[in-house]
Image (tube, rainbow, N blue to C red):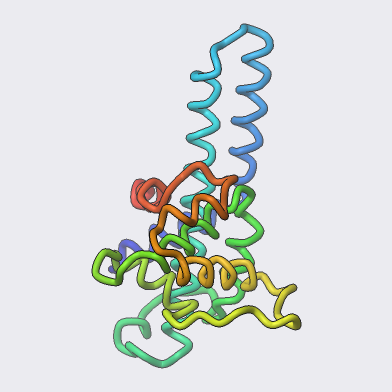
Length: 189
């Protein structure tokens, strides 16, 4: 468990770079495609890799938010007491995730996690769901401007979805499903 926490902290530490990688990769692919005339498949590979890197960073922030929420709640005191988190405020990690989530992959992930049965979720996925719970309520008007509101909306959509694939229709800008997003996150370990 400790190694995964360190890996997650490392992912969050490179969040500013992840956004730069997306811009650099997209810009380089576009420049190369117009200068040399590469096929769309080659340029798309760089863009897909950049999306995966960005999605992994968002998942890292969400997992840290789940850890912070667990630590702040006082549950599992022994397992979370030794964590080296910069803060126990999950809203900070949600803000990081929301600001880094350009295509809504974090939102789609939360939606798909809510639509997935508990027995099919990994430990990290359960930590993310710990931020919202299984009984999701609509966001109030006064909460709409918070960084958590988008994720609460995604959780609400997922809790009402019949299958996780319905989340792809709502969060249509993200080309990655739950397995691909979590796969990118696990690749950083």
